[in-house]
Image (cartoon, rainbow, N blue to C red; front, top):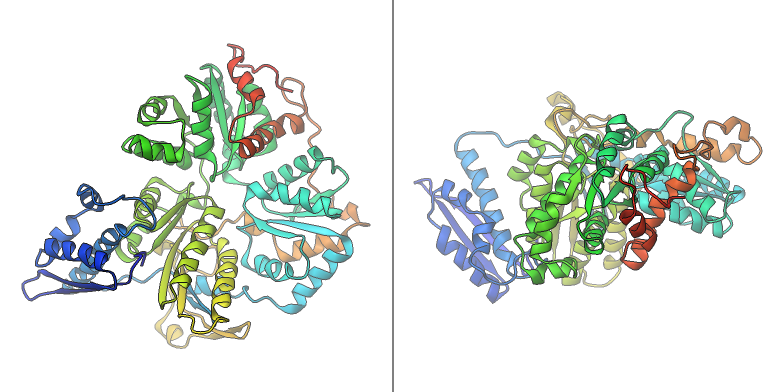
Length: 601
């Protein structure tokens, strides 16, 4: 996988325990790369094969390492393939049984095959009941309700929403950044209510942005009468985080870069302590680099996600080994010296994590290294350092992506389309290093691509496998009898075997590996239908569901809603112009020495 040309690799262990390799390719250049590897490694001891690093190949200075579509990546990927098969042969010779694979979904033009009970549970709802879809569409149309849903929704909800989109255009499934934008778009199109399927801070942001856009009359509803929390948002709503910002305010010029996954109240309180701009996992690196470029000697304080902060620092540290030309591609106003100088002025909060990404731990990384090192690796920027480093290494050889949920979806779509364009039989395997709710959108996008290719004559057979990396501590023990007598479930005309795998619950473990966010799963289909059916004349029943406006004020006596929106609007300005707004720059440069920012209203 991942080679621009086709490559065939054969790996054996001879009677003396030495490794024997053979390779061929349909490209003469690629044959040359393979020949170099075989010249070095054929006849080597297994430990010698496993000791060779991709960085050792980069030292040979052939081509441009790190370019996604370079043929140079061939020998990186072939080396990884050699090492994976070497590990398997060593384990086999030692009499070790092969570890069970992670659960996965295999998608082709004809249907979907689930491997593992957790994967089967995800697949169960990819083909929803038509009656449920029809009921939802009818009530949405009748009452002019738009839906803004996050990628991490329960698979049942996402399956119904994805099917309903074909009949009611005012349904959007996206990352948290786009949800408020889509709500404004739906309000402009005539929707009178917005149902927000996410955690509470997302509903708060939608409410505030609609008010800012002049749609105060449009109702915004959550999907539970209880609080729908978020471990990251909660981490920023603590005295410890405010103490962190107090320290930031004492080191001017200072800018607080706050992750969008925080409450409006947090954004407001923070902005009155330190000038603040919101960021997302897809724009945080560019936001930080641009801020350093615009304000000399700036101190940046990022929060609350500790893993993302550490990963940003590691990414910038890696940039110090790049050439000025390579750095300029990432940001034209930076070079090696500027990146080195800013590292000491980049701070990040040390005590905030997402409960999902926190659990992509050591055991999961070890298993990926052993069984999936030659697959495409995807990782959210919030994952722990080991998983981040693994995905970054894969990215450098064109086999990975690190970023937001949208970045992950786009990467998978791009790689599938590239395979289809080559018009040859292929199997693409993607390790999903983020919340499993993403799989509904991924499957829908992949099936669309594969279906379009199937309609053309002479199309190749391309299969796509989505792997859920979860800890063995999350696995359900099942008897051999139940395995042999596995059930077959029919969904959407396709037969899916139910194979023992991850527990049919959330698939999470404190030992590492979590497949699902329990907060997001509080957004059920029944709650959505309840809210829709009670609108518009039974609002009193939904009083606990409504996303209310903040009536309280900040310590400086300003409206929480108004001040909390400013960091978001600062980010919008940056996205539109690629520069921080002048008002924010002025706030950074003219903050009082006691930590209270001026001209914030």
